[in-house]
Amino acid sequence: MATDKFEASLKKLEEIVKRLETGSLTLEDSLKAFEEGVKLAAFCSGRLDDAERRVEVLLKQKDGTLKREPFESE
Image 1 (tube, one colour):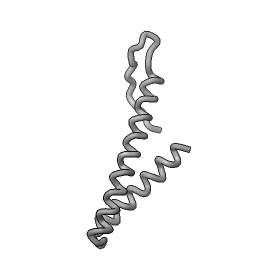
Image 2 (cartoon, rainbow, N blue to C red; image 1 turned 180 degrees about the vertical axis):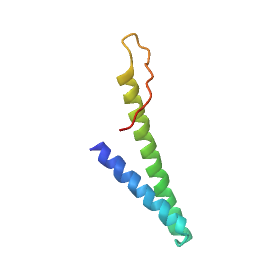
Image 3 (cartoon, rainbow, N blue to C red; image 1 turned 135 degrees about the vertical axis):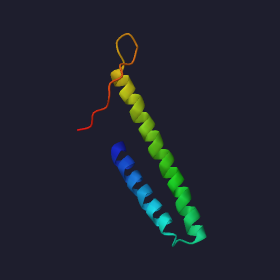
């Protein structure tokens, strides 16, 4: 499922950031990790954009206007 892929990508991105922050990687390994991180960040950002568009569609009124409601987390 796409949600699973988003969650896995986000977790992997977090792991990459932690590895980069340690400063223990070689320059080459740091560049590879950074490149992978950029790809994962772009993927996650795209999925979040898609989710935002879906929410807007769900909130669209019959007259085509959007009804803005504050997001309330559980």
